[in-house]
Image (cartoon, rainbow, N blue to C red; front, side, top):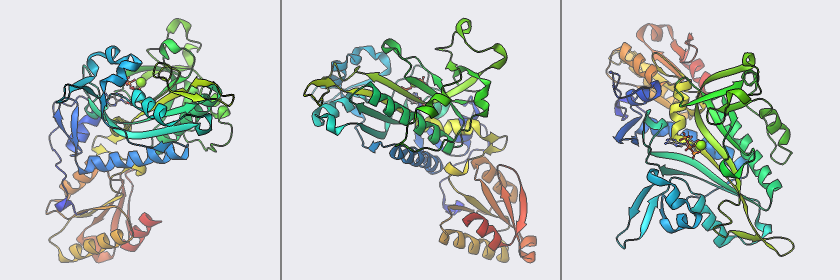
Length: 436
Ligand code: ATP
Ligand code: MG
């Protein structure tokens, strides 16, 4: 992509409405624009990152056995009356009436909808286990939308739902998602700690929130210092017993303020770390909570009918864009992890008026494109300083700088955003570095 043609409305000034760094940088880097409170348009650069996150989330869901579906954003109120949540949900739910006076709503989540699909289409234990996921927009009329996409009103969520015959099966499904979440967040360059979460009236220990540590996080968190030594990436064979991995990750104390009680905390003060964090995922086993009232039953081997055991699992896909920036930036801008970077490299021609530089930059740009490297070519008629500032702001992991002195000597400058390292290489060596 040539930057001269790319829709990248960057801002020099820091937008005053943005309280936290990720929100400021997303606005300054031209990733999103607010439409109304907590509702955003995604511009090309932001959308590219969002799609990369989605792709990783999808790969890990499917590796763990979940199948993709897509449910509507608008749901009938009647489904929510069956579960009893239509009234319970309160003002956070956006309620809509259609032209025939039918009550509808913009889904804040999809347990009722999926339970309806299940009960209409699945009858037998032979069809289980089943795990269905989607990545779809949600709407919650949050009292205080803030921090940009981190607490939006309209936001993109990966939500999935597991269906099992019994609790043993349900736990297996839960464990698979637990591990899929660890892997997903690790691939996004994040260190997420699973923390015991409230299970509400159902009880039990089968709910965890995945929290990324960040000063600006909305949750206060307490966790054993040993977590800092845990390897975030786990290797997995989903056909093997997953319990040992789960046991390892739940062997140390970790809880958010909702669950933490200083008097009852089992960890020595010296070993307990208190901090703040961002909830990027939440997994939940809730048994018959929806299947019983909505009559989602399956026939067991002995012919009896039992309500299906369900769990639900959410990842805040759009929130993750902000969370990754909170975890990875400096005073110049964003530092994208390679896995989600919108482009792999920027080519900066610092002298577009110089024929040799322009020819060398055009040539390298074409070669990178042919090699399948996602490249942003800063061919604008701007000063070098402005080009560096843009590349740093938008966080592209690598830069290749082309200038007249280097071109005479047959070299370009290869820079790495994260480490700040710079090195002179021939254009061929720079190309190889990116395609190796
Ligand atoms: P929170 O405690 O942050 O309000 P929640 O517990 O209500 O979140 P869940 O219902 O568990 O959220 O939703 C699953 C995931 O969706 C959350 O872990 C979070 O990452 C994301 N999410 C929830 N609310 C929002 C929001 N308003 N804006 C962006 N992402 C959100
Ligand atoms: Mg939650």
